[in-house]
Image (cartoon, rainbow, N blue to C red; front, side, top):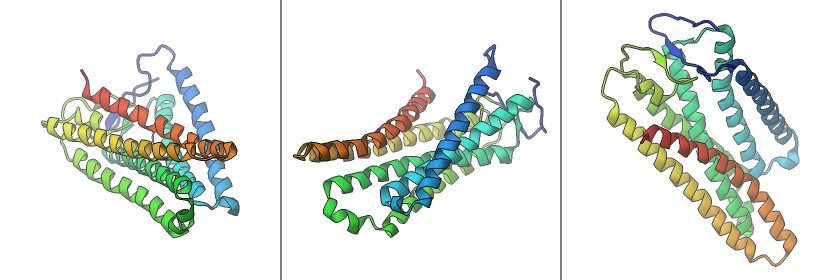
Amino acid sequence: MGRGNGSSTDFLLLGLFPDSPHPGLFVTIILLILGVAVMGNAALMLLIWSDARLHTPMYVLLSQLSLMDLTLICTTVPKTAADFFSGHRAISRVGCGVQIFLYLMLGVAECVLLTLMAFDRYLAICSPLRYSGTMTPRACAHMAAASWAGGVLVSLTHTVYAMHFSTCGSRTIQHFFCEVMALLKLSCEDTSAYEKVVLVSGIVFLLLSFGLILTSYALILLAVLRVSSPEGRNKALATCSSHLGVASLYFGPGMGRCQFHLGP
């Protein structure tokens, strides 16, 4: 593929698998996975929103998680695929800032929402008599709104601050999409202090959220072990296992990225 060149203020994205002898194969596989993810999330949201029996806090929050996941995928993958097939790898400074904002916003919002979903399961299993009075439709809407608002606030702060640094020399971003740490590497200024703030705050945020989720499920497990009915115990465990699996898939790569940026 050709190397796309934009204006002098544009950035160039390195792209996916730049050193691979068969990048087209990998991009095609990723596009197939994208199609499955889009259809799966869209179908889940449509099912929950169209069936009144599923308008419960657990499923409403799950639909919000699917919406966030769908939007997050569409923030990076379509642009990456379009760049590969067109050979045009340029992205404007504004476009880069928008991509950073959306990616950070959705990542933070998903993290907050997963934590709140664990709290929802804790209330449902450990305090069933208080559940209907606490998890009202209004409370559920507030939880969803808090997730989005938290993502917007954190992302806006980091995006504005990261984009204010001037760049010089190479304008090639060593990534397939714009992200804060990759952008800071192009700055003429000393960004080491801010990079440490980003990494430390990210690790603390992930550990705090994951710690709250694990605490919720530890209390749930203790409550489930006290249930005398095997059917009730199995139902409670089945309800929570899928959410705990999703949380692990989210936090595992997140911590891995932080460790990668910390380096040896």
